[in-house]
Image 1 (tube, helix red, strand yellow):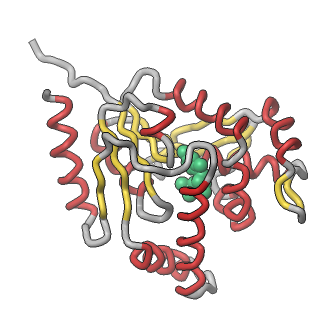
Image 2: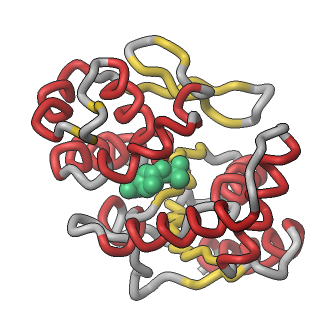
Length: 233
Ligand code: DC
């Protein structure tokens, strides 16, 4: 009798701009898994807080953000064209808006609020309860799914990440310098690692993938070897 392959949770944590979501999307497509971009959820809360005036010139009003939380309904819908899910806030498609510079600048502060993390972590645990998911973030292997069968900690040299981001932004016509991008990459790393609640750190049982000098095909081969070993064990 044919056996169905067991479904697992793949936790993908790591630094910003090292290609986590591209990699997660490719894995999900290959395995027929659901890809969940948890960064998009923190960005969605940040966007709503900006729109409701809870973030102003003096920065993030934490109490106001916490008060808004019960009214924020985040959902995902699969977009076949992108091969990934789009994020919605209270029924409105916000996939583009959450990538704006205003959201990027405020999201570190919003994601350091305990009540925000509690709400989003609970949602993420619910979304992964049937396994068969690739979840990308900063605390998936340490906090959200400490029992994930495969934990990957992704990294790449800061200069390589800055260069990739620079190529991406200049291709879109953005007027940026490599120096300012490198500065942003380094400061985001620092903020993610030094946050008091759920800082970015490698889970003890995570495998490290440094993709500084790897092609997407090489990364996939690296992944499949580890995945097969787990599901066939
Ligand atoms: O992956 P990203 O750059 O879109 O994430 C946006 C921000 O959200 C990032 O600054 C860190 C935060 N984040 C987090 O604190 N925990 C997660 N699981 C995912 C993202």
